[in-house]
Amino acid sequence: MGPEGRLLTSGTSQLASAGAILHALAAITDMTLKLSTLCILLGLGAGLPQIYGIAKPAAFTAAVRRFPRSLPWGIVLMALGTVWFLWNLSQESIADFASYKNVLFGGFAGVGLGACIFVQDFLAVRGLAIVLLLLAKLMVDTGRPALPQTPWVLVIQTWAYVLVVAGIWLTVSPWRLRDWLTWGTANERRLKVICGLKLAFGLLVAGLGLTVFKSVV
Image (tube, rainbow, N blue to C red; front, side, top):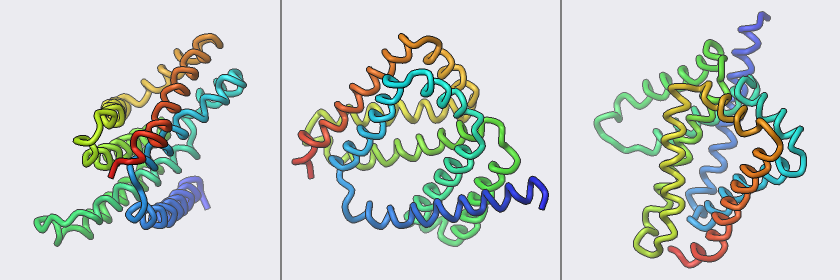
């Protein structure tokens, strides 16, 4: 089997695995996900990696600088983004598109798989951009009902729109992430300051989930 054949098999396998995992998580999410739970997960997800950056700056720098051109990460993120988008599409009940839904499913799945095979340059960044946009949608949708109850929701909503801008920008100019990461890891002092700020923000978001948002319906 040639390189493209192996990559096609790998991409298909990643899509299937991501689909199975996302389907299971979606079933749980529909029943139990609350703003407090989402904020705890987001805060820990954003904050915990920064501890590694502070503790082992050299290894952290090497890892993040490899990320933009990492093909394995690209396939995983593109597969996750494709399946997540298809799941969102499956929840839409717009009558005008009902007769075309299967065609749209096939088309978007083909785009995701095709990107893994034919657009490998900065694939990890492109996949990350898609995931950021979908995550932002989840954050806005989850936080919207709580807006009348507490102004702290604006922290999550504002973060979501920052992710939207970042996702759009990285989709158009994926090499920008490489430049940002190179600048952010240019020296140990700068890296630790950035990691410290991200850790503090992650703890703030997780803290909101554990306190203020616990009482939010």
